[in-house]
Length: 311
Image (cartoon, rainbow, N blue to C red):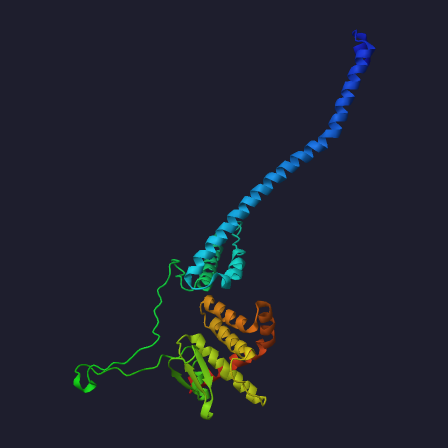
């Protein structure tokens, strides 16, 4: 119909044919080049996104480098905690949905408490010399030795009577030493160890150079393990045997969690066991293999402490 209208209005057939050809060419060019133009536009968008991601990665790497350098100033070499730090970077908090206005604040408060404990526990692990509250370096003083220098004889002095020495109070479950008849003594170590268990002269003795509860729980783990082996006609091997050390430290970590100790201390227990296992992957297998033995040791300690408390 429009073709007849154009012819009736004075347009020649050649002009109409030319416009048809022009329209056909425009349609053909549009069909041929539109995908290429869309592809080019998509490539430009992808290239811009890649540049943005590369810039974000540079910022993330720079932030990681600065954080590792700062944390290395607070007690541990950088190479010792890089893996723990990278694992911590994957931690994030998902805020609760607000469909229930009456309970969202309580859930949000709980999440904030969990996040705060997570950050404090990781700080105590990555930077043990830093204060979890302020992040500043803590000043730690430790007596590594002393020398008695007499100035006046005791008989030549006056004043109130000198207080006698009283050993530190036993930590929870430490009463097991009383049931088992283990002698407990405190004093400096000879090789830098925090504590050790001996059975010289037929009597067990736990020697401690640290007053940390986990040290006593570790040695009680050795004592309980010794009793389990004795019931099977076996005995503990001398020295720091990896299997025995993992059992004792697993006992200490379990009791620490039972007593609500700081997660950072439990993290140190894990690193102690990892040092004897050789790697984190092997430690998982060792814990799975020795978990039953550690559980029986914890039960023995709990029962012995309960007997001492009831006596």
